[in-house]
Length: 344
Image 1 (cartoon, rainbow, N blue to C red):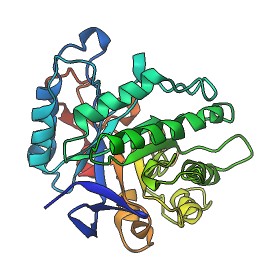
Image 2: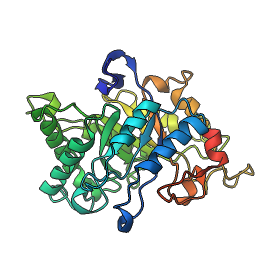
Image 3: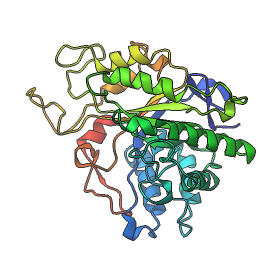
């Protein structure tokens, strides 16, 4: 039975069981060590984290990890055991198709077509060749938080061109089709658009395929839209209302996005601990993750439209860390904080 995840209209489904939806329940994985240590093999440390999450912390519902750094050009590192152990433990892996430097850069600072070049296309092909064949690869992230201002919107066509070219490459090379994600920052655009309106505009643009395309599998469009969201910053937050009484951020998004034509996920989820329960007299230092009920529960209907989340983050920026003892050293697992206990 084929357990690969594929896109079926507005949902993620199992390829071998197309009537069964896949709901992403994930966590952001730590990056490997900085460039000066990039020849160090991070896979034993990654495997230790996977086993910690599943076995030591008993996170039986967790089924996805999101990776932000995965360099296919470092030939000294073999990721086969990592992907295989992840599969054995029941984890899918969301992988990046760009990088912060070198050939993998899609620059938000350059307008199209300068933001996309042949080096990036070759980099994407390498990622697909190296990692795309593992059946537990959930998809590839074409770009993350590129259109963060009106100026950076001039780079948007580069993401669609990159999607088109990678789809064409996968088809011509007879490879398994990898769902292609774009992940956006949940933010408005100046005074013109609210965050929910900006997200709707973004998904509409990213799925507006070229009418001249004869094969939908080679369309210049994304397959899955992700939103990196920090809202839900209080124990008193509700789906319907924010703490200040305004319309709930999640309800606003639900209303704006509820007839999008591709799967929607929260590709980063979680308020900054610096802002959580700020100025309301309630305890600080750990999130309660009650938004998971809003996303996955059936009470408000959000689960009918959305396909899950990736919590932010196992390790990373100080005010988002779910574990203590970081930054991660590339080898040893970190210690759980109350934040990840509440999450689990």
